[in-house]
Length: 160
Image 1 (cartoon, rainbow, N blue to C red):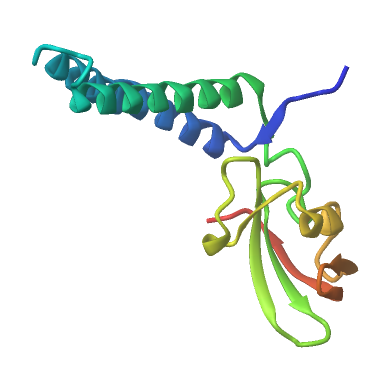
Image 2 (tube, rainbow, N blue to C red; image 1 turned 180 degrees about the vertical axis):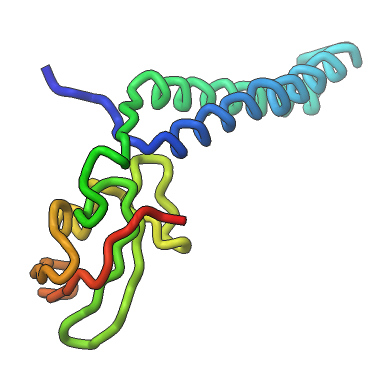
């Protein structure tokens, strides 16, 4: 049997719960009010507002179902379990490209927590997989679509 659990940090889990609460307690209620108001206008066959409100409600329900599924399959990873100087989920990692000297900072996160603009990358990404378990000062070779990249781990820490 395949493990379909989704690893995520406690912060990611709480963010997911908050999104579910927001959808259920705000957007869903508002959409239900719009459906009721449009229904009160009479003939539903040619009531565009009613059909649009029902479609919006269905989209919210679908999104909620997806989020509940993620919540059900969530496996909270305790970021405190691994040594603080080891690259692991929930860690902030500073990398130096050994060829270009460019410095990049990433935080390894679970599904649904990723935000590339903020440097939050999936722990399952090829880059994260290449550096998992490594320590400050270690060097890794990473195969990217544009070729081989050589990296040095400059620092490992818990995000602020």
